[in-house]
Amino acid sequence: MVSLTSITTKTHYAMEETVELTEVEILRGKPMPSRNHSILEVRISHQIMEKYDAQFDALTELDLDLLAGPAIPDICIYPKMHFSWEDDDVLKMTVPPITAIEILSPRQAYEVLASKIRKIYFPSGVQSAWVVMPSVKTIQLFIPNSPVKYFNEVLFHDPTTGIQLDLTQIFR
Image (cartoon, rainbow, N blue to C red; front, side, top):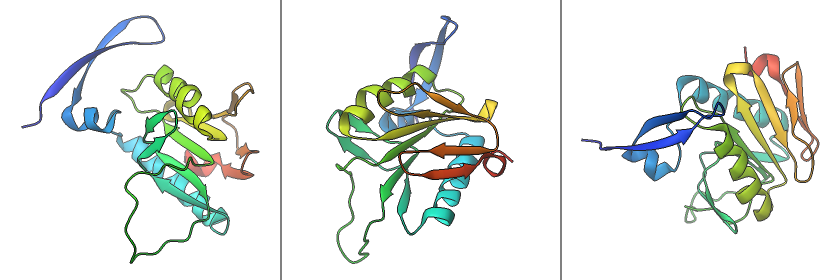
């Protein structure tokens, strides 16, 4: 039987909300993804790999052990890597990705993601981070020492990697 633990969070409306996290969610350090979250993770990864496979690897749910702390982004973008299926696998990456992508889950507080970007990703060397907001069909682009940019039209562009995504295909 899976045990539940209650946590109290504050929403951006300053109301307290009690959310029960399962043992698995506590171990993951974040809520379980929803159906929409899962669809977006696949669509974004697919579009990156389809267009930029020669330059980048898009790795999902990768356990990072970074200088500023641990994290498990939904998608990590790394420069193209050499993989050897015969060698030992890597359980925790210590090299930061170029870009970390977080997809906001229904039970996840936005402030938690923004704080993770500013306090873990950027101090560890991540060069850009995205927060994908499914319910408003928007991607926020975070770049260190720059204002957050919002994309909810046709084209998303991250100048750090040069990656461009067709949002009409992502949120179709």
